Structures are given as structure tokens and as C-alpha cells.
Length: 104
Image (cartoon, rainbow, N blue to C red; front, side, top):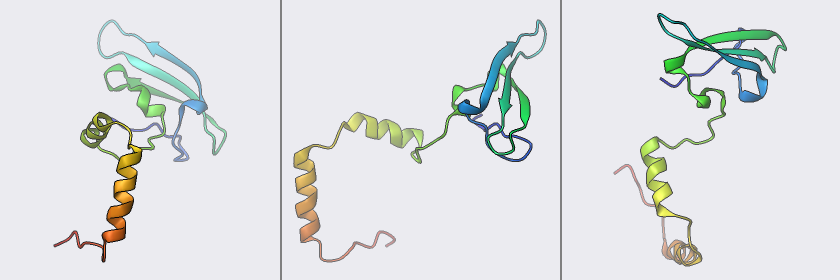
């Protein structure tokens, strides 16, 4: 379950906003990750308790990728684009007379 941590004002909290992080371990029941932060928008202090089973470091990271995990895995196996592939793409574009219709 990937979600985000937000301040009461609605601003998303990132790692740069976190002032303290710790673990609240309980003998019975779920344990929690404790996050204390200062909001970058309203400057107020806030805190959050997140169940340890739901905790991911990515909750505090900015997601820059619009790729799904399947797409990301596929592209990572392809390697970098070579100079030959760029030249081939350039010449294929020169041959293109109109943009293909991908809807049908």
C-alpha cells in the first residue's frame, strides 16, 4: 500500500521536511514508524504514526517516474540508447510522411 504523508494543510511531506524518525515497537499489536516533520508550506510541526507493515522509504520520496513497475523493468533491461539507434531513428523520421494514427 503506497500512499503519501500529508500535513494538516494538505502539503505532501518529503524526506527534507522530516526532523525525526523512530520506531514505536509494541509487544502486542502492530508496531509503528514515527515521523516528526515541519511542513514546508505552513511551517507547522506535525507528526505521523504509520504501521510498520505499511512503511516504505518511498513514502517520503518524490515520484518522478510515470512508468509502471512492468514498464520500468522492461526499459531497465534494454540498456542505454546507442548512437546507431539514434541515427536510425533520425533517418526513419525523415522517411515519415505523416504521423501514424494510433487509435485505429
